[in-house]
Length: 247
Image (cartoon, rainbow, N blue to C red):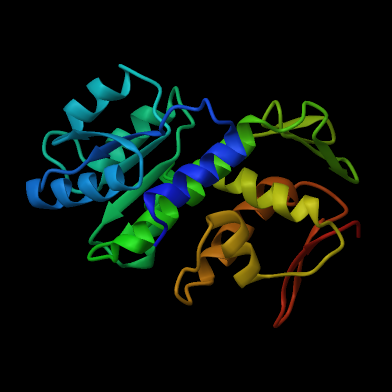
């Protein structure tokens, strides 16, 4: 686990000495759990505000610009998925879902709703802190990409600054996770990428063997990117992984 000094040094090196502490909204209705997480995050140098239910979370969300939201799934008044849906209408702030649900279908439902990540309770605090750092760093990189960051394979074009994807000049609507997966594949066009590497690069951590999550999202991408077009661009290399290439 990084010490507070190490975290501050890392953040100041990457983002500049004048940057204020990252602001985290913690949405958790169990007081003991909320207090424990809040203390650990503050020890790491983050500014933390706690909400005890879904309605309070949405009210606090609109009051400031958050660096990240830690969102419990099971909440009073509004559950975590509904809170996530409403936040995603206006914001791309990183959201990590905290859940006792460990069924893969539930996890995919959470990601499809707009969460960037999830962690299953009970969890080790070191893992949670690592995912917080990963998601904040990724969001910062996304916000600071070059305006010329445009990639193309055949007639498929992805514009990072506009967060826009087109094929044959037709707009394709992707979820945030689908967008990140497609972008990584296009960054490495022609290179076969393993499921494990895709998990690490796009989700930011290992799914403890649940690489079928990648297969599910590849299927989503194919339906949107390849189904109505020729040539097919997303290819499966059996026993290895996936590659995006012409023909």
